[in-house]
Length: 286
Image (cartoon, rainbow, N blue to C red; front, top):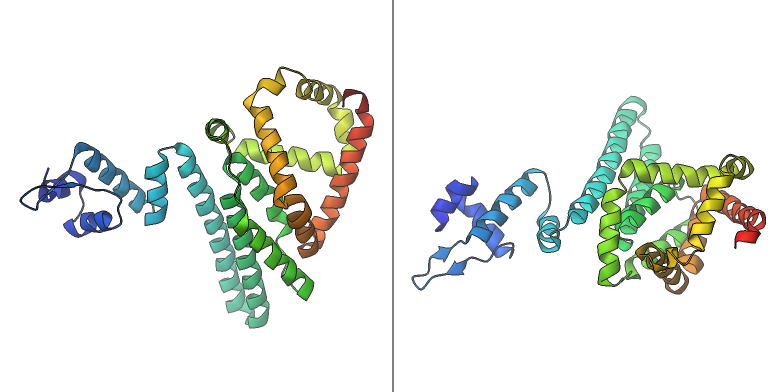
């Protein structure tokens, strides 16, 4: 099909189609007479591109969606867009606050904090794929709401960004497929419930163990079973633990987060104590 017919079929301008060709989103065959011949696959791609552009996706985002051909790529973009919307809403509040109070210094400090928060959370989602990246986003976001005031905090922020920019969490193809499937099953509600459950176990450890004693015993028994050790979930867990040990996540990233955020440092101390209590209470099952 020639470009004029494609324009009508896809409701796109000739200029737009030529731009997508320049960006290598589509590659129609060039005939001997110099005319471009668009295949059925090209037209299908163009229709998808049109939808994605109208949804506000960038060319790079569209390229990732088309190349991955999986729903997880769209899911990751959705969460990045959701973060951008949250930050935009906070900026809207700052505009209103600035109009009412004219406190430029306060608004500037809050704006810098928002930008740093967005930088860390976006890099977390880029560095860690699928549901794990979304879980880390929810886990760390509440501890990034205060401005950086000291040189030590700024140094910690720089360390965090360098770490997240440098890591490469590469997993085998079979585990990638498993992670993609789990990521689609773990929607926002499930991940939020998981995050809330972890928070309850940390902040109200004794009460949590009392209320969930039998469930915890069953969970630990399953995690120690030979059945579990044959599952992709076990292989994924091993890969994550190994990555955290060798990448610097435990030795670089977490200490820097504690230095950056006093609130996170307090949480991390409670987490360590909670782990000790769980290990002591369920030592028989370990």
